[in-house]
Length: 627
Image (cartoon, rainbow, N blue to C red; front, side, top):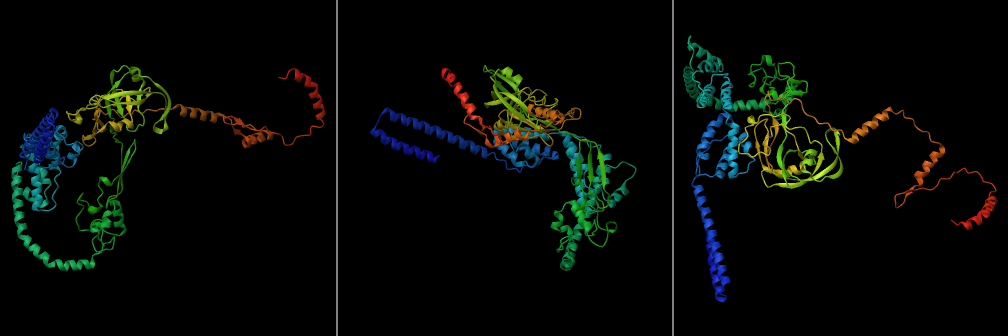
């Protein structure tokens, strides 16, 4: 602001000197024009400064909760963000968008990370998150699964009891917030918690019961008292255990280093601490343990897993080491259209198991379509449906639409090849002008005319309610879920020109939204409900080009031919050889070759006199008729 004032002062001094020399009307007009610009600029700068001061005064100093995409965290996150940020009238949409992106992470952030930070995109981002995660059924299901999947206890430790109790109580309270009546769940919840207790604690609890149905409040009080007792005993023994550990630490460390040798790399550490051993796949670890004659449970020598006194696998509680546990990702799956064979890798005590089943899921892939306006020969626009195909090098249009537009056609001869080298011959093309329904984007491009672009897309009409599309988006094809004909196919040349920055993921095994000049297009994997999934018959187009058909027919006749081969004479062979050695082509492209002569010519005898007499006899005739 001060720099602007200094500039104005300097102008006034210079203009004053100019007006002393030339005091005309033009100089006065220059002064007035400059002063108007000066005051307008200063007013604009002052308004920007005032608005900036107002925005900074509305900063939110509360630590907002992070949200990573867990349904169990959505209710708490939504209520907090909605109260502090979304309904805060002192913030504009750009600042709200900044706060929103700052608290998202993981799967939740991927939903909106492709949207540019702008005031218009904030409503789209917030609406997308609500459509994705405001699902009461999934939220309730995740809270119930958290109770059922709470880890069981193997030992009586107060931290494990606290964690089990807190997990159950917190999820029950969350269900109550969702208006789920859990007051009558005691006969169901108490056995679930009891089954997860360690044996001594379970026995102590069962000793307190009588013939009446136990209540959750009684179990909660029992576990709280048990935790308080274990915590007090543990705190009294910590000092004694730490002092004993310090007394024997040095001696144990020295003796361990003397005897400690890794069985795999022969270095001074345990095998389960060996970096080289941990880099191996589970199957390779299992083979190395067998090769080294180690116990598959504790990875040590001189005994087998049946006689091992160490603990079991932490994943499945079976008698093998956790490093040798084969989970689902370590299975080899061989898929065929008729069956799927799942081969479980060998574990420590289980034999090789092979299971066969015929369940084979076919996810449907939704292709991206759009609706555009196409101009006819009279300048009138018609709405048509377009398939966007980045795998095509050319653009195509149906002959039906060409007749409707009445555009002039150009003769061409082009063979278009596809899958398995199948081809079609195209004989016409046309220059088509089209424009977007939702923006100013327009283009004129060459399209090749075909009888039919493709089958109806999608193959069957389906409901779009399960996709939870944001309502504020302008779709390029509002009827993308309705099966219908395709008039135009746009190839890669046009596809990359219509793309805009902006992408929204609708979730796992769901399509993706991409922003373009034609609107938001949708495409990708689509999970269709069983009653809608009659798309098991895949539509396949088979095109046989004229050149391929010709080759097939030619090959047929070659097979039927007896293969009679003509035998050339020696003179014919010499003529052919003479042609190959002596032919040439003139400037007009014609072939020229010397006449061949026989090598073994017989003498003609005394024929010169006879020829001379005949020539003299015919000479008068040549004079009369020289031609």
